[in-house]
Image 1: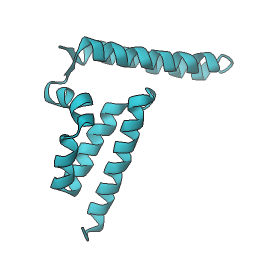
Image 2: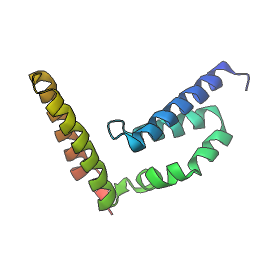
Image 3: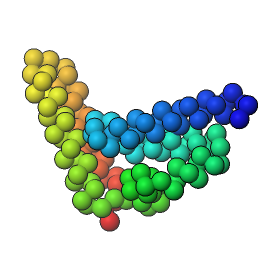
Image 4: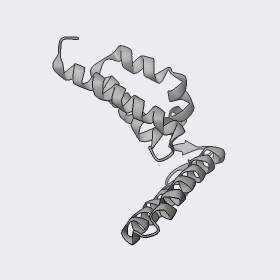
Length: 123
């Protein structure tokens, strides 16, 4: 892999993979967008890396059904919305003296709930 652009794509792919994997445990980081970026970066860098990632358990568990049908099970949607709500509630409480922060968190939370409720189909 002598092409510097391919090396850049590989590096970005692994960075997105790491952030997405952290997002599995830490709900404040979005798993699905980072894994989608990983697929994109690996596809740009190498067919071998792309094939490897799309066959991993992480991809099949968290992203494959969403990529194929833009849908999730009700359990997945509720788990994601519940964990994000808990994390954002902690942030909201921690910013009890910062009104702008509370407003921003509230807007992000509302957009998150609306997106999951109306834009992602339930299987």
